[in-house]
Length: 222
Image (tube, rainbow, N blue to C red; front, side):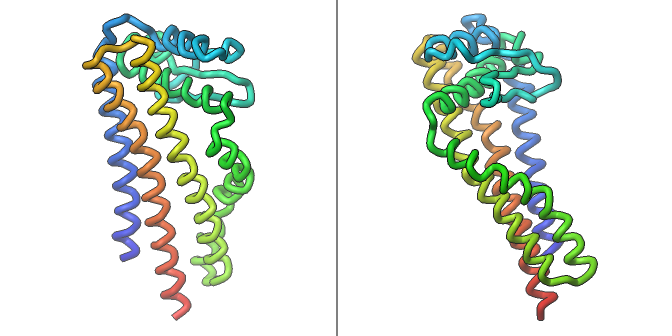
């Protein structure tokens, strides 16, 4: 059962990664009919929502796109920044969705930020605790590690509505602003749904890992 849960958690994460990479590669080859590049779409969305103070920066790497609330900056990877594909405008709009959430004090963001320091510490300490708890048969460390993983899982669960909401905003804005046509709506939705799967997979994977360590802890107690 331990091996099954470990493999299931691993396969779920790999499947989600393959799915998002596949969607990205597919929609990176389909150009949007209006010819918007990622940076143009992002600037249009931000300005329309009164976020002229939010900067857009070019970032290196692939799919490293994100919004930094500390500096109020949307960072877009090279292919997204310069590209005029469905993937480019979908990802750019999603990150702008996060900027809009931040400006509107979206509830789940405030909640996530409030527990971020604890969850970051939990993420760093969980695996060492579990490792030493198993190696040295210290039941207390094992349970502490499980509790720390639960904190990480809580953070991941809170992140889900934030990501779904940003994607929903992105699709709605692109449609309302006339930046995509009816066919492209389905393509943007497909791209964003594939990306969201990585967050769902992370939650399921963490839950399976917690169950796995609970089984190990209970077996060692018996």
